[in-house]
Structures are given as C-alpha cells and as structure tokens.
Amino acid sequence: MTIIFDFVKIIILITVLFFAYSFLQSNIDNNQSIGGWFSGNTQLQVPDEVLWGTPSPHMGTVSLTAESNPTASNPTDEYLYLSALRTNAKAIDLTGWSLRSLVSDTRVYLPPATLLLKMSGVNDVQPVHLAPGEYAVLHSGSSPIADVTTSFHTNSCIGYVSARNTFTPPIQSACNDPREILPPTPQNIITYGAECVEFLQEADSCRSYTTEMPAHLLPACRELIARKLTYHSCLSEEFERKGYEIFNNGGWYLYLNHNAEVWRNTYEAIQLLDENGLVVDVLQY
Image (cartoon, rainbow, N blue to C red):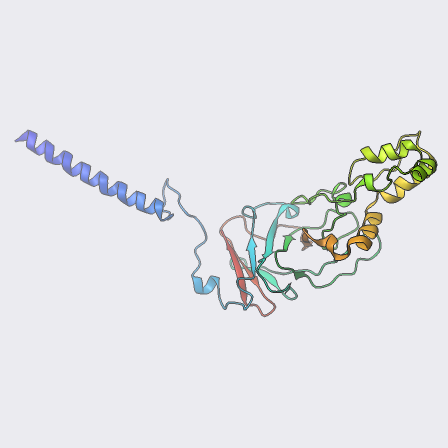
C-alpha cells in the first residue's frame, strides 16, 4: 500500500512540475515578465490609443529608430535616427516636426540646418527636407565643430571636417583625390617639380597639409598643396564639377544643443510628430 501511495505522489509531482514548466515557457515565449528572479520584457507598457494617438498622413514615410536604446548620459552621445523610405514619391518637409516623450512630456522641435556647411562666417539655415532614402541623425547635444553650432548636411568633402572633429556616429570620410590635383604632365613637372607630383600621388585623402610638407618641395608646389587640399577648396571645385550630387549618399546631422540628456534611459516612449502634432512613428523601450 505504501508503495502505491509513493507512486501516486511521484505522478502528482511530475504533473505539477510539467504544468509549472509549461506556464514558465509560455511566459518566456510571449516575452512577458512574471517578476521575481525572472525578467522578461520590461518595455514600457502604453495603450495603443495613447501611444499612436491620431495618425499623421505621413505615417509610413519616415521611421524613428535608434542603433541601441538612447541611454547615453552625455548629450553628445545621445542621438536618434530619422529615415525616409526609399519608396517615397518626394522629399518630406520636416518644418514644425517634433519629438515628444510620453513619460516626461518633454517635447523638442527639429532644428533647421544648412545644406552647404561653411567653416567660417555665417551659415544660412533652411527647413530640412528629407529626400527618399535619406536619413537625419538627431543629437541631443551640440556640434563638435568649434565655433560652428549649425546643423548641417554631409557632402563629398566632409572628410576634411571629420578628420579634425569627433562625430557621433562617425561621418563617413569623403574628399577629393589628391592624385587628381596635379597629373604628371610636362608643364606641371616644370612648374611644380617632379617631387610635387610624387608627393600628391602618395598624399593622404581628407588631410590638409600646412607646415607638414617636406622642405624640399618648391614654393609653388607648397602653395598649391596648401590651397587645394582644404575643405573649402574641395567644396568649391566638387560643387562646380558635380553640382548637388555632392550631397548624395549622405545625411543630416541635427543638433538640439541641450546641456543634458533629453530622453529617459529606461521605460520611455518617444513619438515623432508632424507639424500638426499628429503621430508619424513611435520609438518605445
């Protein structure tokens, strides 16, 4: 009789463990937190009608994303991505668009920016238009360029700027080719010297040379290098040669110029709002 009783207890125990395991597995598969030592999905819970509000006519044309949760404590390192779909029929005017936290109710507006960034003087800014397939990086902090706080669009000469400044995320280097500045023609060798042609054949792209040039180069060569291998010279010549193609394969770097982080590190829901305050997209974590 004792053996039968013990056998029944074992069967009951196995049954209980089976159902307990099934319950836990079901919660794990559904990515739900059951508290205690186990932590599943701790994403902020917001009803859809609150999260999405009134949909914008632009919903589905621009997405709001982050490479990872925007949890950086330094505003310089805190940023979000706006990406326009490649299938959009035209550029999206971001005038009056904003981001709003549903938790802190913080609301920030997308700043205007300059298309053709200048490193001196005043940069003329304009409303940002996000072309099909184009992106914008929205930083909470300020531009790393000294004395230039303007938001801007990257271009095919921006490598001269990124070589001297640390951008987050890094800007893809792009510049004119030093080898194309002085082809090895007889006249160039007479005017600038064979050493000048050889120097430019080996010169680093996106690097400005001033006092770092070899002393044996002719004065005409040194003047040419100092004048040609610069951001503004590259910009002027590339724009004259390619026009607005110099902005292809780039994007906008937009700066909110905040001294502290804007978004919460955990339990956050950020709405991308159009000029009428209607929801375009949501980032939730």
